[in-house]
Length: 266
Length: 347
Image 1 (spheres, rainbow over the protein chains, first blue to last red):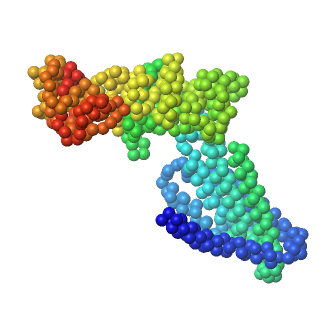
Image 2: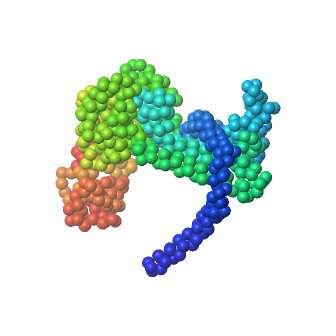
Image 3: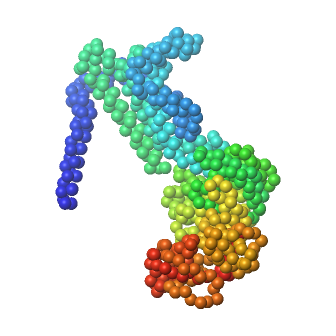
């Protein structure tokens, strides 16, 4: 009986592994196709292509700047959402998730209504002689709009996991609320916050739909890949895509390693 | 030193009602009650972590009802481990000290003194997650006292530690109290309260049922809840007749050694270990003998508890040997005999 039980169990596992494997193959196959379909020659010439490298730098820097700037407001907001109960909290949580569920081209159109010269923010920027449409600031806004929910939600979960009694104990020992936040809550939620920052950065970098509407130029890499594909075809778009994916992967491996290192030192 | 006057607090679904307490300097004040009775909410309110709806809290005659928790000089140790997990033992203690003074040398000296007092010198550089239950409590005590409180409040400090370390912590707490520190200690364990308290308050369902010395609370329980909580098995409401009987349930006449008390109605306690069980009625000097049927038999750490229906349920506590020799079984008829002097009038 026991043997039969084990046998059934292992058959079930095999079935699970088979279907799981199909999904993995579905993810890996296009990437492998990209890798093996790109010639070394075209890849090397892409690395030396100034337009491509400039666009990759622009993508990395705008996404990083958007993440850090939004982080200043998103982290305190996440803390409030984790700790306080107030009316309309559920509505606010729904609003925060909105950018994830709406089509990103629609998000771009929505952003355009406030960033264009006729929009509220666009007008203010115009006063300083800045046209947000077609500006790195516009790209940052589009990236931040679609990716900030990842940071808020991860940070909110992180703060929620910090036991309230630790904050109360610190207050009882004489710490002010700001000291409790910076010396207890923030360090204890650090891992989730960093994960959220990495997620937001990654999501911002890969954004296409909202950015292309707000700022076709200067070209971030997802837009450049699209443009090369449209103008010159797959063979010209492929090496750029491969280079961008390789750089993204490299970045995330480094970031994850830093987080892991910090954890083991903690 | 600390006065709590008509304090009422609504916290989530719980309501603490009209609490009045007076704690003198040097008291070891123990708040007892079952879990969910409101003890922790009361401590957090006194500490200033929960705002009361009405009433006031006075510390040395100064109203501190609305002052910040950190300025009250009332240190609270939570029931669950509240050491900061990202800081070492030393930095946990330092956290409290640095809020008072930035002088590193002075703080180092204070850490060393506290480490010596609480025998945690060897733990100072340890990660808090590697500490045992007893070590956690000692470090928490050191950290709480580092903030210089006049009153130390402890929420179930012995509940999460192994029994072998409980005596060690109890000794530590007694010595802190002997050295002049006022302590408010919350527990659900009445024996723990008796072992430590100079004064006890009993809390149930958000209401304060009684306050007094351990002897007063134990020997004269104010009501059935307190009697049961103190471990009294036979607390019976009774009418007192002029001829020296306590009449329970209108018809069960129990002889008492005293002449009729001043009141007509009250309650009596019968010590379960003074009830003799026998298969036959025997003549003796004991004035109370009742025939009944065994309802339940259960083993306890102090012997065998036998619940007998004599018109009311009466609990007798006998040794295992006695239980074996009487060959007790549920449903069996048995005689319960006890002296009039075993009956104590409590109201």
